[in-house]
Length: 201
Image 1 (cartoon, rainbow, N blue to C red):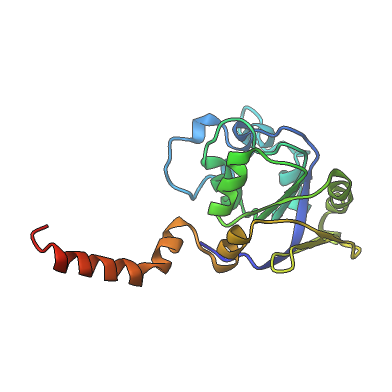
Image 2: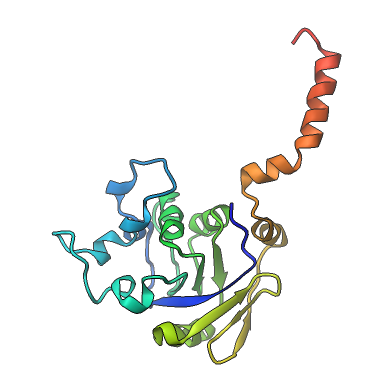
C-alpha cells in the first residue's frame, strides 16, 4: 500500500450530503474483484448520460478537477451498503483524501485499508475548504498527516484527529498484509519451534 505522509493538490467540491456507496460505484460494476479499473466508473450515474457521454457540469468532468486528489463533501459520506468497491473506485481515480463532517463507519475504515485519508472536520471548517475547492486549480489544499493538519489555500490551518494506530499504518503504507509481514520473524520463530516440538504434524 502506498504511504500517505502529506499531500498538496486540487480539491473537488461535492456539496452533497448522504452520498452513498451506490452513487460512488453503482452495483453493475461490482462483479470484479480487482482493485484497479474502477476509476472510470466512479460516480458513473452522475458523470455520464444514458449514452455514455460525459455530463459537462459534473465536477469531475470539468477541466479543473479531472486530476483532483481531494474531495470536499457533505456529511455521512459513504453511507449505504458496505461495498469495498467504493474506496477502490475513489483510489483508482486518484483520490487520496476526503474531507467531510462525517462518514459511514464501514466506508471510513475501508478508506484507511486502501491508503486513503478520510478527514473529519467541523462543518464551518469544511465550508471554508469547500469555498477553496470551488476556486479550482488556483487553490490548492495541503494535508500533513504527521502534524494532523489541513491548510487552506489562504493559509488557514485546521487540525484533525486520527487514531494513532491508523496513523502509523498510513504513514508506513501498511495494510492488513503489511501488518502481518511486520511480524514475520516472530511467525517464523513460532513455526520452527512448533515443528521441532511436534514433528509429526
